[in-house]
Image 1: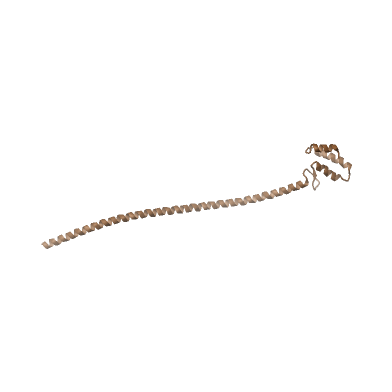
Image 2: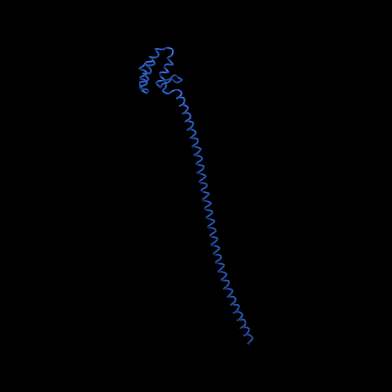
Amino acid sequence: MNDTCDKELDFIPSCPLLLRHVSSCFLLNFSKVPGRETAMAKDILGEAGLHFDELNKLRVLDPDVTQQTIELKEECKDFVDKIGQFQKIVGGLIELVDQLAKEAENEKMKAIGARNLLKSIAKQREAQQQQLQALIAEKKMQLERYRVEYEALCKVEAEQNEFIDQFIFQK
């Protein structure tokens, strides 16, 4: 190999002029050993970080790394698709849970309303019962007054009947 080629390759591996240099080194080395041109070219380019793919196109990445990158890209795409499906499922589940929560809240409100209505009805019945008891007490008092008045009127009648009987017997 040419010593100047090796020095320049070690010095600036990412230089834009590297391709020209590699090509010139490649041509120089091809002239020395005619049967091993392909292997030597691959070795020289490999040392410079350049590789040939299956279509014999010059690539910066090693074919194995390129294949791994493609596989990783496909796996990432599959993963993103699965995450998208998962998000859809979770979104549907969240909507369902929200709907159930709303329904539960509505039922809870209905139950609270029914309980309050029952309490209200119980209070109304209690108030009505107190009113009826007060009315009964009032009627009992009125009955007692009427009984006393009746007894008094019966006495007056008896006295008047006695007076009438005495008046008739005296005549």
